[in-house]
Amino acid sequence: MSFDRRQFLLACAALGTTPWLRAGGTRPRVVVIGGGWGGLSAARHLAGLCDVVLVERNARFISLPLANRVLAGVDDGRRLHQDYQAAADAFHYRFLHGTVQGIERERRQVVTSQGPLAYDWLIVAAGIGEDDALLVDGNTEAARHLRRHFASANTPGEEIRQLQEKLAGFNAGEFLINVPPAPYRCPPAPYERAVIVAHAIKSRQLKAHLTLIDPNAPWPGYQRIFHEFFREQVTYLPNTRLRQLDPYARRVSLDFDDLKFDEAILMPPQAAAPLCRAAGLTDPGSAWAAVDPRRFTARDDERVFVIGDSVGAVSPVFGHYPKTGQLAARMGEIVAGVIARQIAGESGEPPLPDSTCFAYLHLAPPRFTRIETRYRLRGDGVLLQQIQQQQENNPQGENDAWLDAWHGSLFGQGRPG
Ligand SMILES: Cc1cc2nc3c(=O)[nH]c(=O)nc-3n(C[C@H](O)[C@H](O)[C@H](O)COP(=O)(O)OP(=O)(O)OC[C@H]3O[C@@H](n4cnc5c(N)ncnc54)[C@H](O)[C@@H]3O)c2cc1C
Image (cartoon, rainbow, N blue to C red; front, side, top):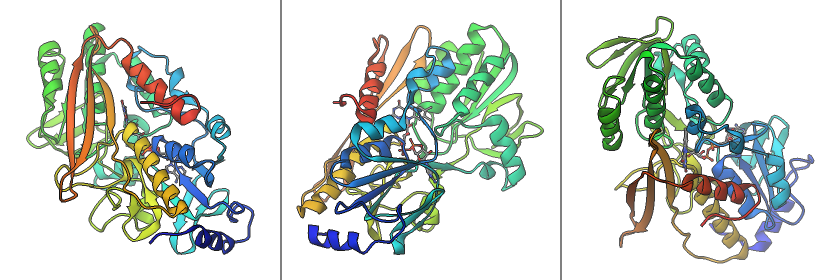
């Protein structure tokens, strides 16, 4: 379904009556849920063309990309914090600090903690959901205990700082990290965390040991690093499932073994943000949002887009796009283009996204891995993925330059290449 400008104005005129509910004058309104990489990118690319309202529950932006460096003590974390209102002012959209409680698709409105908000288009960029109860047989009290003491720190917020304190206070004993089953956000991030913990154990000569439980196939680059540098500090268990967890007794059952631990970072399986499921945007039996793989429209609703890490499989060949910030931001650009073309009454195929991801392989001497993915279409329209993984022993701030360029683009100075 495509809309011309007249239809738009009629649709806008038909919207509701409360101040927030009313659409923005003669310009169509786009509501963006989530001020992460995907939502910020969509908002900035649509500002000027539409009345854009970005709704975000956190008061300030905290970057996850490069946040593990804060844990490693090589970054004070200040550059990871950004101001939402400054971004909205720079690009001329509206920032609403609030929580979206529900999406009423049939009424084309979202219910927020500040009141209802009508939309002409809705962009859901709400990141991931993590259900700790999945690790503890549905026991919600144990799940709360888990989040309080062994949080994954995989979502934007204060957990990274808490993790930093945990690592600083860890002096001896068994440390446990589990990798979530794929797909999950930022594929190298759990292994990078393991390297940071291993480095702390080795460099501080702690009477301690790390076990890394991984239900996925082994990651060769990290397997080599654990073998080469951390043979005494790390046991890496690929293809191993965490079957049972008692967070009070600090005990896990694996496929063939039981293990006691003193400290842990426990990562539950990931899924689309809970809002997606509640709004019927996930397929039955799937944890992820069902979208058109090129335009990111919901399968049954041309007015709703889902972008970023919530997005489900896009290709029968490689499955999911990697869940990275750059890819989420590219999706934001793409949906902005789709909406712009609809407003102009033009047709055209959207571009394909790309991704770059940096992670430490080793801290001292520093070795990085840089993972780049590019996409192309096969003749029959199926998406193909090309992954290039490079080891950089002397990155010379390339990762900083990448983050600065993206922050500039999302918050108001410059633009990444
Ligand atoms: C340790 C770590 C390292 C990483 N390193 C890299 C890297 O080097 N390169 C890279 O490209 N990517 C990296 N990533 C991945 C990257 O952070 C994610 O892919 C990216 O944040 C996804 O963007 P998003 O917009 O989908 O979700 P998010 O960035 O999570 O944003 C979603 C936003 O929605 C908000 N929200 C959710 N629900 C609601 C609601 N109901 N109401 C209001 N607001 C809501 C959340 O508060 C959040 O701010 C890393 C991730 C981790 C954990």
